[in-house]
Length: 410
Image 1 (cartoon, rainbow, N blue to C red):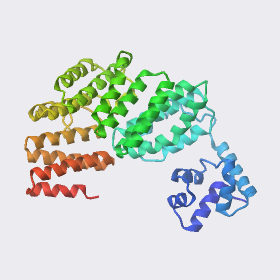
Image 2: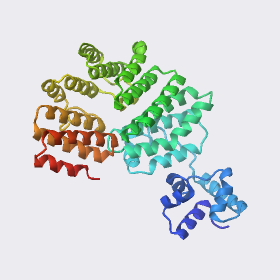
Image 3: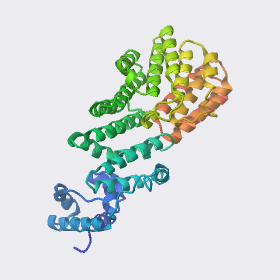
Image 4: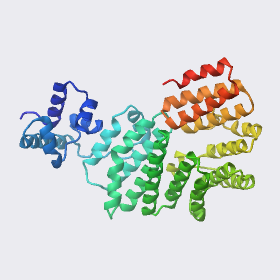
C-alpha cells in the first residue's frame, strides 16, 4: 500500500460521498477523531485495527502497516522542541484569537499527547484550562467546551494513576470540571452540571485545595438554586461555613452572598440582610491575588445581582433598581462575563416589570435575548422566555410586547 492511514481514510470517505461529520456518525467516532486522522494528527490504537480494517474493507496487516507509516511520518514532523514556553506561543493573548476560530485547541492537545507527561506538559494543560475559561467569558462557550474535552480526560487519568504528579493533575482536573459544570449549566443540563460539580469536589479533595472544594460546593448549591430547591441550596452553603477562614476573600464573599440570596428566597429578611452585609464586608479591594478559576462565577457583579434580587424577593423594586444601576446590563459600568451581563439584564427586566415601566422592560429584554442567542445559552434563553410570558400577562394588548415574540423564534 502506497498511502498512509490518513490518506486511506480520506480516500474512503470521498468515495462514499460523505463529509467528516457523516463518516463520524457512520463509524460511531467523534468528528474530532476523524478530522485528526485525516490531518495525520492522530492514529488509532492497535485494538481498533480489526474493526477499522473491516470498515475500510482492507486486510488488518495492511492497515497496521499504513498506521505505522503514519506514525513514522508524524514523528518526523514533530519539532525537537514541541512545547513552546509560556513566554512564547503559549501566551494566552497569542492563543485566544486562534482558538476562537477553531481547530488550534485540538492541534495543541494532539501535540501534548505525543509526549510523556512532564511538569512542562502539566503547565500547558493548566494554560489550556485558563484559555477555556477566558473563552467562556465571552461568546465562545461552544469553543471552550470543545477544547476542554480534548484534554480533560487525559489530565484526569494522570490525576487517578500518577503518584508523582497526582496533586498537580488533580488541581487542573478539578478546575476543568468546574468549567465543564458551568458550561453544562448554559445548556440547561442541570443533572450533568451537578455531576461535574461533584467530580470537581472529588478532585479538589485529592488536590488538598480548600478553594477548589468550596467552589465545587458552591457550584452544587447554584445547581440546586436553579432547580428551585432553596433548602438543599442552603445545606450546601452551610457545608462550606466551617472552612471560610481557609479560602480566598473573593470566594468567602461569594459564599456569603449565596447564603443571603437563599435566605431571601426563604423570606427570612433578617438573615438575608446579615449575610449580604458580610458579603460586602469581605469582598476584597483588589482581585490581583485571587485565583483566576474563581472568576467563572465570581466577582463584584455577584454581590450586586444578589442585592438586587434580594430587594425583588421582598417586593422592593425601587431599591432593586438603584442597586442594579450601579453596574447596569445595557451599558455595563464594570467588566463582567457575557452570561453574567445577561443575568443582570433579565433581573433588570423583572425590576422594570414590577415598576410597570413597559418601555424599559422591553428594551432590556430585547438586549438580553439577543445576547443569549449570541452565546448559545439554553438556560438563559428559557429564563428570558419565562420573563416574556410574564410581560404578556402584564401588558396583554400592547403591540410592542407582542412583537417581542419574534425574538424567541428559532
